[in-house]
Structures are given as C-alpha cells and as structure tokens.
Image 1 (cartoon, rainbow, N blue to C red):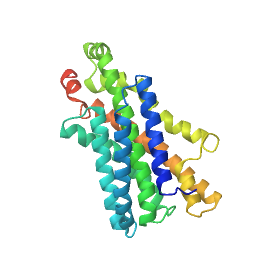
Image 2 (image 1 turned 90 degrees about the horizontal axis):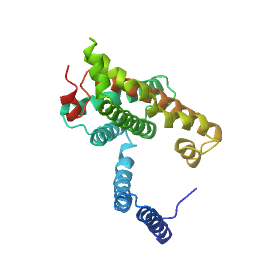
Image 3 (image 1 turned 180 degrees about the vertical axis):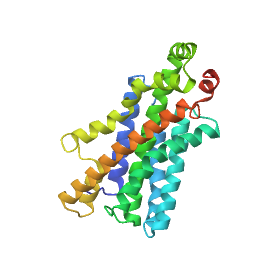
Image 4 (image 1 turned 30 degrees about the vertical axis):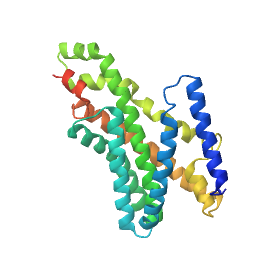
Length: 254
C-alpha cells in the first residue's frame, strides 16, 4: 500500500474534509468548524513530525527524547480534555499515564523482545503513550461526571463515618472499566474486523505476516496491561484528591 503525493491526494483530502463538514452541518453536529481545522493541523503536524522522526530514529537517545516530548504533549492534552488546571492535578495525570506506559516499555525492551533502537522505540512507545492518554481521558471524564452527579452518595458515605478517599473510590469504581472497553474490544476482534496499525506497518516495511502478527499481539497486550495500570493509578490519585478539577477539589472536602 502506497499513497501518491500529488494532486490526487489533495483532491481526496479535500473531498473527505468536505464530506465530514457537510454531514456535520446537515446533522447539526457542533464539529463542522473543527473538522477542517483538525485536518489542516494534522497535515502540518505530521509534516513536522516526519522531519523530526527522521533524526530521532538515528540514535536511541534522540528517540527517547522524542518520546518524552510526545509524553508531555499527551499529558497536556488529557489534562485539558479532563478540565484539570492545577499543577498538582496535571502532574498527577502525568503520573497515571507514566504508570501505564513505563512498566510495559521496560518489559518489552528488558526482555529483548524488541531492540532498544530508534526504529523500535519511537513506534512502540508512541503507540503506548497515545493509548495511555486516551485511557486517562476516558477514565477522568467519566469519573468526574460520576462525582458531580453522585455528590449525594459521596456525602452519605462521609455522614456514616467513611473517609473521603473511600467515598470517592466507591462513587467512581463502578464505571472505571468502561474506559478499557475500546482496547479490549480491539484485542478480541483483531484480524476479524480490522487490521490494526502495527500489523500493517510491519507488512509495509517488508516483514512477514508472522512477524506482523507477533508485533501486533505485543502491542495489543501491552496496551491492555498499560491502560489497566493507568486507570487504577488514576483512581488512586482521585481518591487522594490529587487528581481532581477545581470544582470537585473544592466540593469534595472531607
């Protein structure tokens, strides 16, 4: 699979943006302005990233530095999406993401499953960081919504003598697993519904179907393990009132 860079690509992208924007306008979905801006931003970002990645792949140290930059951008993005404002809360979001990505990366590279080189570090770590960001955003947004709607339940726990951490944990725990469903579903249906990126990437790079399958299984299992770690760590930080938006930090006082 190759994509020709030329007028055909420009035409296809223009038609796709027009399709998405047009349907959003017709269906009165409030993302019509966002779609073209997101497409333009994606193109510019990928152009810049392609230049940077070419350099980062040459040395392991540069690859690690590039992944750290990706991680910081991921922390900023999930914090913004989750409504986090204080440095304490943003740092806690980063800790939750790190708790998911770091153990998986250590296992993959320490066991020698993948070589500690730029071409391996950037894609594997990039996939993991992106998925930890997604998991944290889903966990945080759902948990914060549950805490806002379940404030009476929270206060009821306090009134009968439970500590704040227990009360918060009990309110947010029932729906914690929902953030993990997309990745689990992708793992269950891999190869049946779609061929994910790691599999296609290895094939396009000249690898065998067996090597592609091994890489994809490694990524999927790693993402599942990492997202569980991120979700549980986020819950622990929320229970300790370290990972909360300003309104909940004010309302959920012991």
